[in-house]
Image 1 (cartoon, helix red, strand yellow):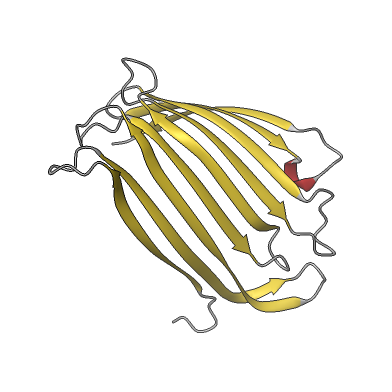
Image 2: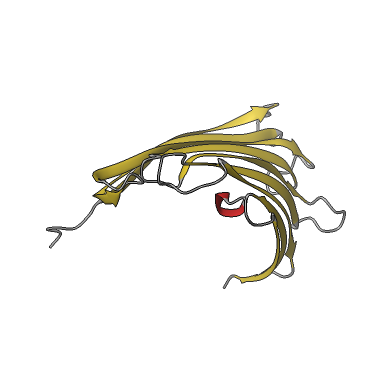
Length: 187
């Protein structure tokens, strides 16, 4: 049944913790997590130098931490969280060799809008510089600002604005400013 099929495998390990003052009911905790993972694909891949290779893979790390909570109520998720992430892929076949990301999300930033979320993120993509990869620039940088409005129990409206430096690693086009408006329905 699977003869001749390519296999993509991914694995991850992680740890969760609660930082801060540990009360008996865990109400003043500041949850966090760390994860590390790896992936591998055994297919045939075109290399930037014109050759082919069998198999490719990569690794990733991420950490996120709540650093402030508005309330001691464990059911109340209002507060500020930060995150950081790193990823690596084979620069001989992958356009993005390294990725660094960081940012924050603040839930309940506006009084009376306790379930809305405001966030800011930075994403740096280190582009493959192997001969044949074709990038004029060595990186692409995206800055993203979003606001998620909890419109109802079943609907979110998300306003998003991104500024992208060196889009697609090109130096012959201007930086990009992209805005989106999304409606997310959960049923």
